[in-house]
Amino acid sequence: MPLSSASKHLWLALSPHGYGHAAMTAPVIHALRRRRPDLRLTIQTGVPRGFLEERYGSDFHHVPEVPDFGLKMLSATTVDLDASAEAYRRMHADFSALVGREAALLRQARPDVVLANVPYVTLAAAARAGIPAVALSSLEWADIYRHYLGDRPEADAVWADMRDAYNSARAFLRVTPAMDMPCLANVVDIGTVARKGRDRRGELAAMAPGRLGLVAFGGIDHDLPMDQWPRLAGWTWASAQDCPAGRDDIVAWRSLGLPFSDLAASVDVIVTKPGYGTFTEAGLSGVPVLYVARPDWPESPAMDRWLMGHTKALAVTVDDLLERLESQLRKLFSLRPQPLAEAAGNEEAAEFIDRLLSAGGGTCERS
Image 1 (cartoon, rainbow, N blue to C red):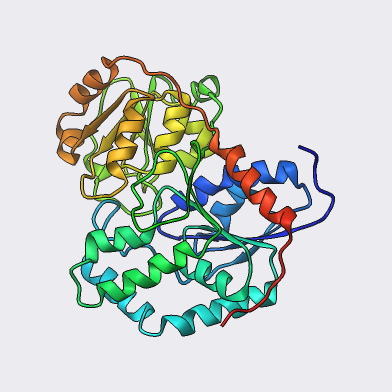
Image 2: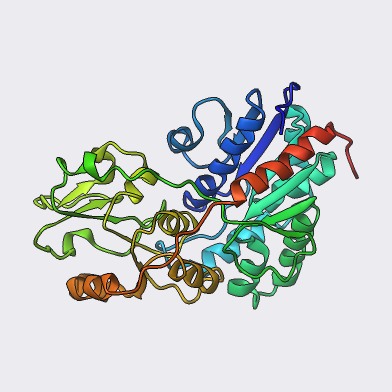
């Protein structure tokens, strides 16, 4: 496809619920920028700029506040139900006014297209401002809200606002794998969206001789105490969390000097929770995965099946990791190899967004 000569402005809104939404969208933006090297990019999210620059480069304008929060969490796998319900109740107490403020922000910035992964307030605001918008994700907060908080007195009204906001988008690009989305009428299914890391084991050998594992639970604190992590002969563990004192077998992953995707493609095992970015990057590279099962999370059934179809993967408990790690690793490594995944969704999403940009934007405020 020939590159467009007309500079366009994309407004990207990212849920700051961990780092997964930002990581997932980055390969799509890279694919889009190959088509449009002069694309102007604004990123609206509470995710720190430093993380964004690692994934997107530095050529973007950062708006560090976004109404979306996803869910309030007690740990990487435990939802704070009461805090989440109260936050949503307050946000929807005057939802129209909130949407109006966000619409004013968009009208001032005048993007040609809004892309959301996956803040629904931004989508509602784009609809009010008359700006074409598209959603991209493996989840949507409306049905997650109903799953966890549907018994609250205000739930029907809150859910209806969320549903209508998502359905206002031109399309919801549902990546592979993804949760069911029964409240949406605009789903367009696409392939896996992810960045395949480079295998750089040779570079790591001098810094971490022997076998290397990566312990990564995303951008939310987890309840796995690294000071209780078992020592295994011949193993070094790269941790995304604070490293305990006195443990020469545990190192901060950043100290190894590799981008996260390259590190994830270069280790012998990843220990994690169900999460789109880590699961798909493992599936692209065939790195075995031990993951703490999360049966209550609506994405889990689809993600678990997908992961087990593309690499050796085993669901475990925290006790399995802390008390039976060696036997769990033996069991994991004894599984049959699986065919590697492909990231066809990167270009599919970029093509869809590129067509919207080509169609023109502009604002035409709706009541």
